[in-house]
Image (cartoon, rainbow, N blue to C red):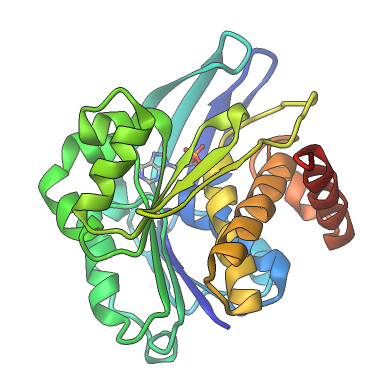
Length: 301
Ligand code: AMP
């Protein structure tokens, strides 16, 4: 089944304790689309870049089979730029700058060929933009949304309207607390379920992720990794891999959702092993399956 991803496609500057890279391919939409593309379903990407955006990056996305009909390139516009710095052995990430540039004035009209999308993923983006995409897809089977502190702080009212319309909200632990004012994650999740989604998935970084509905609880471990190079985009990879698997089996049962969380976890674990999407360029599906089986064994008791 087809997946539609809307999210940012960015030029990132990332500083880790050992290295700094500038203007590398990043963005919630780009990371999620690459992750989803491992499963071989058609992946459609909606986003915007400026004229400064290297063609090599968009060419790469196309080599992954990602449909870029929904990508707008604004002449005379500047691409979204984000800078982040990791300290304390990757435990802390400070955002150094967020320049929305062309994203601030982006009002996408979906190509007709995207309107039959079944699996819709709203990666981190302005909430009004996320909502406008929901309104343009008439019959989605599943609508999943990610958000982050930046949008919770800047666009709360619009974000509430978006959250009300989605099936699953994915966010990390600190964002769940920020959104609800609850310090206990289970209470935060219960509160989010009252906002509209029927499931909330909370990412806890190196401690895995949990899924909560009114009647179920599931905890997925993180893949144990010694070689952490750059965690940027791990959350987007998790969500993209999650969607990619669900669309490939075209099933949203509790069992499939749990497997999808495991695939998302595994795909994110590869992304962390290099900067930008570099590691994903060489990952084979057989390697994904091998780590998936390792995780299965790790939690069997
Ligand atoms: P993650 O590490 O999963 O939080 O994702 C980091 C990616 O999200 C980077 O490639 C950034 O360019 C992108 N990003 C950072 N801030 C925002 C934002 N406010 N909205 C959308 N995307 C963002």
